[in-house]
Image (cartoon, rainbow, N blue to C red):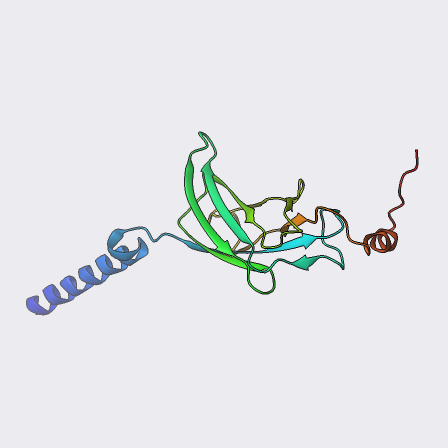
Amino acid sequence: MANYAATLFLASALFFLAMASSAHGHGGRKIQPEFQVNGKVYCDPCRLQFLTRVSRPLIGAVVKLSCRNRVNGTLTFQVMGKTDFNGMYNLKVNGEHEKDICEVVPVRSPDPHCRSVMDHVGKARVSLTLNSGISSSVRYVSPIGYMNFKAITQCPLVFSELGFVPRIF
């Protein structure tokens, strides 16, 4: 009977240790989160700095996600990617970046006529921490883009449809 009690005690202790170890990750190591950052890069042919019906996705545009420490500004993480045929990019990020400011910025436009970076939507911030209240590991960021150097001929009609009236001085 003593052998049975000792065996039961040992099995319980091993089970408890295994459960405690798995609660802290693999072998007591903390598991690093993995995030997926999704967004869109587009060309604004009317120089409005927002999406309109004449905006178009930029295929093969290069973007960069950078995370910098909030206190001293040092670079803690960086990854680059390219857009697909819909102008969409998907960036993989490993690790917790709660103490960082992370932003996606456009790097290079494939369109020689659409290479002027937008002032207002030239970058997109993204939260890359598990401590944000967001349950998903997928992060969607605002569209970023470029503008044509010169507005296309359809723009006055687009302005009218949007209710923009030019100011006359």
